[in-house]
Image (cartoon, rainbow, N blue to C red; front, side, top):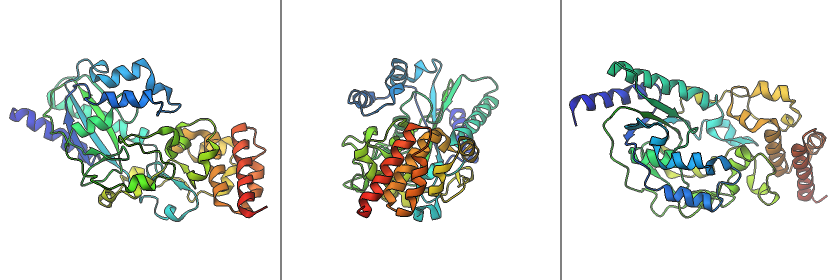
Length: 349
């Protein structure tokens, strides 16, 4: 490997770290070796209602990165930190939000930094470089690519785990039409006999092959799921109203988690209260305009909150749930009515 290539690769990694990425690795544009696992996951309908994942376009591009960028010669894989403890007092609050979602939306924060890396590469080589970049938005198997780029191993809860940074980071990828020095794949699995994530999952959504049955995952049920939350799973959701961190909170490797990037530190008004059930559409949009929570939309957020309020079992919340049960959205009404019945059941009414 030439000194020039090594120097360019290191310079790119240094630039990435200056921009807040805590891990950076390079892999080839070769097709992922474990695409069959993804295909089997789809065949088993473990993707739930995320039908976009099963489209021909999605599957073909995940099977071959060069269908995304034919000129691709290298893939730079990056990790951007958030902290499961970023919520601080939120851990003791009644209603919980996944740590990554407490700050501004990472879809707004990370892409400009990826673009800055591309510009840096182009300045270094003195010409435009074919490129594509994603953070959780492109049709690629990012965790497999990250393992191949040496960033960590795929844990039993399907999260990528790094021995020095745990799993509390978001992945991003830049496909580049230029050769960079490749890193060695992370071949060692350090989960060992530990099953803490599996044991702690309240909905038993973690599968034996290091994949997730999305249909039972609290993150899916409160974010990607646009319809009813199955009644049989509502009690297991507890007080999570957007996403879930349980499997990461119990993972021993996350004792090494670095601090969150400042952009992902809490920025929304906390703690969430049952009074949010009265939020109007304009109030919801104003409160969460820069937050990932806007992804659930008002109807999903109030659906989730209704279930969480029902699970707290506080009789004082029956009145506010009664107001939500009059909402113009049927989805909200149905879940608020369930919550009232759940509180009454727990209270022995």
